[in-house]
Image (cartoon, rainbow, N blue to C red; front, side, top):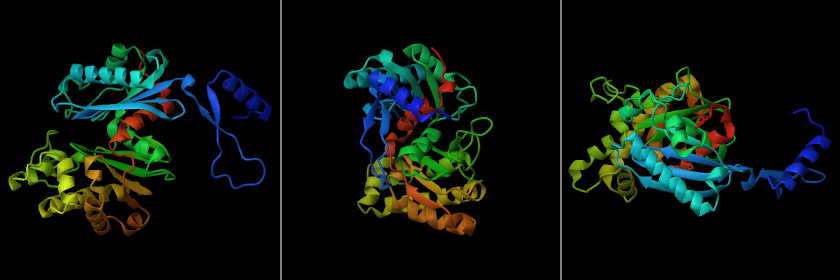
Length: 353
């Protein structure tokens, strides 16, 4: 920043006097001399809120600007939710986390909103896979006007990638792919340390990569998309005839982990299909790490082992050697935590109420 040591010290002292910054114990210092002083923003500096509005859930995380989570709540939603009902659920969750953390809503500096849809450069949702009332609409403005707080919106997989890169399995990696495999399939790309969204915001939409030209018609209008093969509904449908009463991906994964052979086979096949699609991405992007998140990511090696095998068969050997494929570390919280980071890093994209 080109500031002198004296200027930095004086500024930090002023921020500490105003309780915006406090000192933290230094960790991991192995050099000579006096250990460096670690500083962090406090709750006094303001509050950031992350919202993950998925196809079947809403999750709200409240954190202060020092990256410490203060409260978190989630609720299930009907998959056919309408925007007004979803916004009402978000506001109810926000009231709950604000009360739990003992903060004032006026201290919120911004809200990050994640949606299961591509989001273009103007903040408009562009996918027909979300309620049509929001296609080409401005969800950030709708939420900002309802809550009276600035809002910034992004695709949920981008936010998962952002969170895993900062706090999870992507730490220390410059180039990574985060795959959110749940009801839908999407990917977030972090290239040279920054989220890559493409020219229109649709980068990473691997769920609509064709893996079977003669397959079922996808809701996007194409045939045999990856989502039709390994999306949540498709996986559950494959064991519907078994009479085991499995109606969710979570139940499918639990049964496979308990040794059920049919569920184990379904997850292994899903890993193979996902690996075929990701092989093309590996050849193009050549990432350091591939992170599998979402509900399918909780299956761990039941999916990852077959995924790696297909990558080794279909991607360039050099790309496979330089890439590690791992399970996400942040689980179902990844997208909401990424939304918090969006508030902290991309305030210039805020939509004011």
